[in-house]
Image: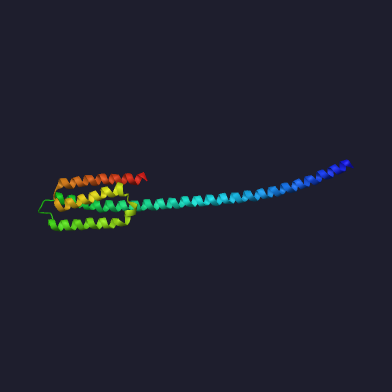
Length: 172
């Protein structure tokens, strides 16, 4: 009988322990599933954040590229025309005042068209050299439109500026 009672007690505690183990297992599984779901949600939010930052960076670089294309096409054409004017014989050049007004208007137009890109242009690396080119172009147009050496100096300055632009594009 002692043996029977001992087994009965053992079986009773064994079922109680198994019940408690099942209860703990069930609770742990729920906690693990909740933790896993939270990790997956956090990971998805993190991935979304990366995607958003990547898209923003892409859009910024795209706008920066458009800005630099606008700068190069606008100023490049003006500087080319300035050089052509400076090497033409005086009898083939248009009236100096007409030329100056036309070129100043073109410079102003290019400068105004670039305002939409101000946010994307680095004010120190690109903005300052660009404003110096703008100032020097106005100086050459107004004071020395037929001076080939001054125009060539402006072309060199513009060439250095385009190198700055390329470096800025590939730096980011």
